[in-house]
Structure formats: C-alpha cells, structure tokens
Length: 466
RNA sequence: GGCGCCAUAGCCAAGUGGCUAAGGCAGGGGCCUGCAAAGCCCUGAUCCCCGGUUCGAAUCCGGGUGGCGCCUCCA
Image 1: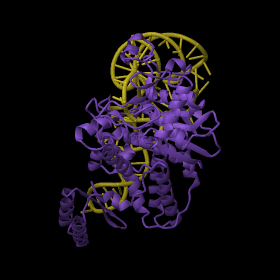
Image 2 (image 1 turned 180 degrees about the horizontal axis):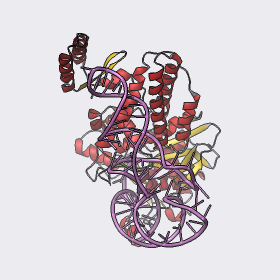
Image 3 (image 1 turned 90 degrees about the horizontal axis):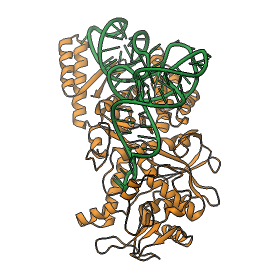
Image 4 (image 1 turned 135 degrees about the vertical axis):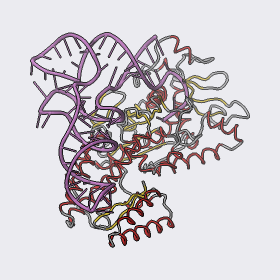
C-alpha cells in the first residue's frame, strides 16, 4: 500500500509500526450542527482507506472522535437554552445516522472530549512541568511555541510575516502563535470542568492528542499511531499543534503518516458555514439515496477538490445504476465463485493512494464484460456466481453495490404504488400478447408519466424509478 | 503579504519521461426490440500559454495566465 503523506509531501510506502496492524485516528466533527457534505466526504475518504487496509489483511483500529466541548457548542447552548449533553447527543446521533446512510463503517472507538479530560490533564501537566507551557494570571494555560524547536516542521505552514502573526495576537501570550491548552472558566455562561489547574475547559487541540494517547497510542515507539487523518484545513494549526503537544509531552511523534482530504466546493469555492453555502447531508439524502451520494463523493480522488454539482451527481448515479442492473441479472444466487483476478485488479488500484478513478474504471470494465458474457452464455451458473461474488467484493472494498438490486431501483415507492405498477405491467403484457401494441404503448406511456421506466427482458418485464 | 495546491475532450476524471492519452456522463451511428428501455459494438482531445532540458514530455525545469486552499472556527 502506498499513501500520500502530507507531512513528507510525497507518496510513501505504508509500513505499520506493528506488523499487520494499522492504528488510525481521524478528526471527527464538532457536534454543534448537522453534518454537511464536507463531513461526508472526509468520512468516506478515510472509510475507503480503512476498507482497503482491511482488504489487504491489516488489523485496523480506527478511531474517530467527537469534539463535544467547544465555543460553538457553548454558543448554541446559550442560544437555545439546552444543555451541553442535549445538544451534543442530538448531533452525534444525527451524524451517525447520516454516515450510516452513506455506508461509512462505524469507528472501532468513538471517544468524546468530555470523557477524556484526565488524559488532557496529564499532557498539560507534563507540558507545564517541562516548561513548554505557561499559565496566565487569568488562569489560561498556553503552549509556548518558541520552546519547541520542531514547531512548524509538520505542516510547514506557519505564517512568517509580521502582519499575519499580529492578526492572531492575544493579550498576555508570549508568542503570537501560542495556543490555548486550558481556558479558565469565564463565568456563568461558560462550560467549566474541575481540573488540577482550576475550573475551566480544554483547548481544542489538546483534545485529539489526549484521545489518541488514551485509546490507541503505542508506548516506547517513535510514533504513537500509524496514520492521522482529517480535512486539509486541519493541517495547520490543528494538527501542527497536536503534534507539538504530544512530542513535547511524551517525546513521541504523534503519527507516522499524515493524510488530508480535499474540500467539497460549491461553484468553485470552499463549502463552509461562514460562506453560507453549506449543504447538509440530511437534505441531500432527501433527494438521493445515500449510496448514490457516497458514490459521487468518492468518485473524485480524496485529495483533489470536489466541486459539487447536481449534474455530476446524476452522472454518478447512472454509473452506479449499471452495476445494479448487472446485479439484477444474477439475482437470487446463493453460491459464490471467487474471482481472484478481478479482486486483485481492484485492490491494486486502491493500493495506490486510493486511486478511485482507476478502481472505478476496473468496475466499469467488469460490468461491461459481465453483461457481454451473460448475453453470450445466459445459463452459465459459474459465470453468474463469479459476477455476484465480484459485486460483493466491490461492496466490501468500496462500499457500494451491496443493496438489494430491486430495492435500489424502487426506493421510495410505496407498496400500493408497486401493486399498481405491477398491475399495469400485467395489463400491458396481456395487450402485447394480443398484439395490441397501441394499448401496450399507451400503458407504457402512463407508467413513464408516473416516473417508471420499464424494460422487457427474457426474465419478464422489469421496472425502475427514474 | 507569507506558504501551498491545481489547469487533460461539451462535462466529470485517470495518467508523474517512451506502445495508438484509462474510465464515466452527454452527443452521433449500429446491433437487439413489434416499438421502446436496458445491454453490447463503433465514434471524440496532443494535454492553459511561452521558453528550456532530452533521442523523446501531458508528464522534468523556468516564466506567464487563470482557479482554489491554508495563515481565524472549520472536514
């Protein structure tokens, strides 16, 4: 497996710290609002990484956190009068539900910041003891970047010029880039926890360092975990700061490899709350099945920007439709016949830094060849078993193609409508038998108007929702 | 202002020095079909511009132009 390490800025061979094991931590959402398409893309990107490593035989330990203590959550509390727990529980559930619809596998561990406070205290105390952190008179504790010689060597993105540094300046800090490890309690409208450093709450960056240390960090190794992932915007300062805390606190680098996914854009601009162009997953799911959305969001390489467009999404749907039409042709088989050659080809593509374009081209080629072979050998059982097995492998590796082939095309149609559709099809077949083509075409037209498209096949007349 | 990424057919998108530049969508032609649909077959680009390196470049180097991102919470 080769991955692009954004620290080294090149593709590197993935060599795990421990043989055949991969410990991965991905920055999860701050749960103060519903997941947008950007969250979806990030989730799907690292889901593909995980599935690929698993298919290659690695034992993957996958951790994705929830940031459940943060300024924006507090703002929401103050705005709505709801408790922290109410807000975060609601959005965590909403997030999990959306990700399930997108066929993203659940993380093995889903830690919350509020449950990892002890681990944060440990790092902060170490940093204070070692002189990497200092406390202001108001009780805030900051990390002193000037004490860390390696600061900025991870992302190489630290601002150099004076102007940029002054923009992030804050009263009392020793260096403009110093960041908060602990924020002292600011009064009634704040959320505060007891700590050895007084009442307050943790800074954002410390949360991830703590959760990694607590849940999956190796001891006595140069690196605590194998891969740390997240959105490209997190590289600096978030990941730079995580690395600084962990390295200065434990004398271990945080992660051997760093991976960052590109953004979802709308009309060529980053999709974000502040630009007012964000797009919630739950809204997109009202119009398109999760699987279609997944297929679309993963069809652009994870590092490249993806400019959201409905036109492209529809093109993706049509591409996925073809896989499911093939699946209908091998419907109902139980026995499987492995096709190692195909599996290796698909895996080979994904092994190259998740080259999804290559992988999907392999899928397209497979679908095309399978259709042709089925045309020539409609009764070949082994062939059909092979095809079904390959579709299952596609589902396992890419997370698409696993649904029931009929339900895929009939999603959103209620039982009553289905009954009516079947009656009309029956009526039309009768008309066809009597060579009353005018009536048959009339019925087909009626179905079309209902948004139903039919296909006459050797196995009878099939229908799909357009 | 600092740092960085990107630019391939109508659209999406692989490709990192050398066979005829993958694949998908859309379009055109054909087979199949009562007619359709689906499926299959055929069909399209010399790779933003200029210069350089090389026997040879979409692929490397330099300079442009255009777009985007980070530097502030952000996936």
